[in-house]
Length: 192
Image (cartoon, rainbow, N blue to C red):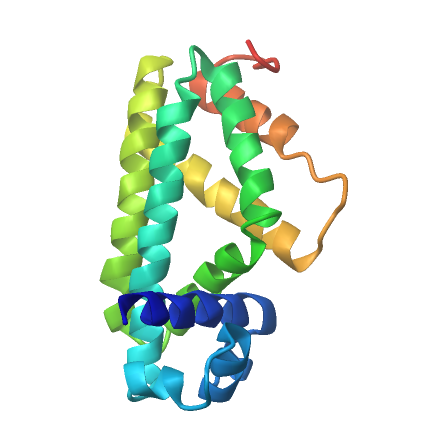
């Protein structure tokens, strides 16, 4: 039964991320999940419950992605950090595009449902904790604030790529330039 619920949630994330909040219906989720009609409504009695389920499931998936990214990145310097973050952004806007778009749709949903904000904030806080530690190691005089600036920039870059896809998307130069400015260095070169 837990597997079927997860199947419904994965499909719901896909619908939300690829078709938008207006298309997020029980029928669309059931069709995307390949389950009998009424399955999504059996697990989630109303739209609020469905959105809450999507949010919790999405946060768990993204936390797993970030933990894997953080464990595998281990940057030795700011250039390697920039390269690792650029790779992650290409993943988030490529293979994980629908999931990333679903997160942005939930940000918009939180405008009218402020009760979603604490869960969304916890996800951001985990990313800020990892990034703050990296920036501290690389000499940032204000690592937490600099990580917030970096994350805000990355959200903007991702939103732009989701909205206006560019097949030659390369966030690396912008990330290196921003890190250089934050760390007080003229440039941060690729892989250095």
